[in-house]
Length: 417
Image (cartoon, rainbow, N blue to C red; front, side, top):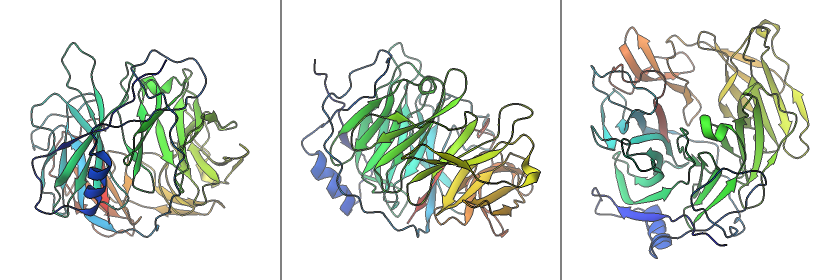
């Protein structure tokens, strides 16, 4: 029996400039008929009870033009945090938070949400050209009805304002703590997100949505890792089992069933695509004393794997995490108190020394030359979001000093251009 599709609905926000940007015009044309939706193919398996989901197959994906890798840093950074007041209390998981827009020097202003509200605006993400901002919204909390999960997409102006129509996309979800975090496709017209407890939802801003169902324990309990391939044809999903072992799924973005890639190490912590899209790099370090650090390459066609040789000094317990890439060079985080390193597919390692300690997992800047993370201590005092050049130059403050970053649940994104 057919089920209703997930709608994509549009609303206009109050701050609308006298001009209309080109991309806004595209969204308006695509959405003037109201709410539209498509539905999905589903992977096989036993599925939890779910809300209404799409039931038609999505149309075949159109030809995708790969954008240039040469990107520059924009002026703006958007962060999700409970408060930026100097005397604010630490943020905690699930606590209501809003989006703030910040610029060099540390000035910040509220961008989305309202002070004192009961919603969580989180996981902000700029489109590849920096002209749109997407984020997840959860809530309102404290009501008897199920907590709603929504993707919100809006235009973003050169003045650091949300502009044009706002697109709100309901995210189907079983009961779950997983946040709806948008991940942009390279073409800038599609997004993907975890549908908590159900699978992966793919959104076409020129059309509708479809949901790929997956039977994976980690879709209920934590934030899985979702990565688009460089050509936008597939998504890679790293998600845990009930035994805390990681599994790697390959999901066709244009329709079709997801399938598991065999051979991945169960202690994998993070993944990244190679530049040609033919393989996935997986890194991990083990969960217990005696665990060994590793970086391996998984062929997405055959499932074959091979390890990248690592320095012999890395033979102790590690926390290997890939936090960014430039071509086939990958920035590897080995732990909070250990140096970062660039590593290539041949195992060549270039250490990166940071003078300022990390309180949150860093994000690589659009141009690949700086790291954005929360630090503390001198000369910043309380916790502060900073951009730290990888060449050792002086950092740039991107937020006021506040303890509201708390236990590492703040999220942030740097505008590309």
